[in-house]
Each structure stands twice: as structure tokens, then as C-alpha cells.
Length: 138
Image (tube, rainbow, N blue to C red; front, top):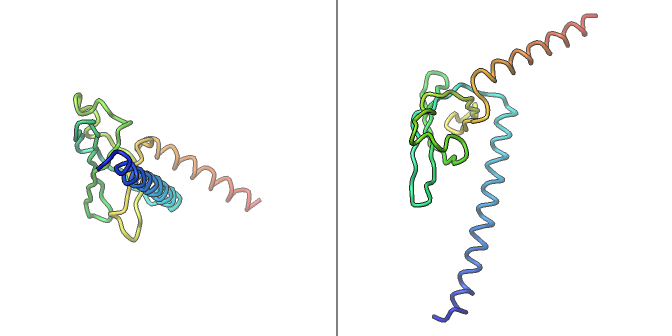
């Protein structure tokens, strides 16, 4: 095959892959945002961290329990805890896991929210609700 024929095939394939990747990312983000809005969450725990491939794609395993059933997931997350494979300092850390109430396997760990952050957030929500109720009475 000539270079021109290869380019005719390769360029459309690359474009399709890029478009599909962008679409998939947008779709997942909407799902994550929807789960956050529904506010069904538990506290999950990081159980493992490892890398795969030559480009060192980092993966984090975590577990969480919903209604007495334990679930576990593995996610590709290269930004947070990149040094954890070497140091193992992220194992056992706890973060908020938002889940779909109808399908608890559909969940994601919010690496930006710890258990303590969520407790603070819930206290603020409770205080705001109490203020609103107090204003309604007056």
C-alpha cells in the first residue's frame, strides 16, 4: 500500500476514535454529575493501586458497601495518587462514592471528597435546613 492509501484509511479511523472518546467522556461526566445531584453516597476505601502498559496508565481499585452488599471497582485515574504504586500511601484512604440507587454497581469515587469533607458538608446542609425551618415558623 502507498502512504496515500494508508492515510486515507488511517485519518478517518483516528477521527472516529477521537470523536467516540470525547462522546464517551461527556456521557460519563453527565452520569457522574447526575449521581452527585441525586446525593446517594457511601464512604468507599481504596484497596489497591497499580499501573499497566508502557505508558504507565494508573488504576485504583476501591470497595464500597450499599445495603450490606460489598461492591468493588477499578478506575483509570492517573492524576491523583500517582506515586501510590511506589509508596502505597493511598491504600486505605476513604473517599465519597456516589451510586445509582437502582443499580449500586453504577458508581464512582469522588477523589476530591474525603469522609471528613462530607461530614462538614452535611453539617452545613443541616444548619441551612434548620435556618429555613426557623424562618418558616416566624
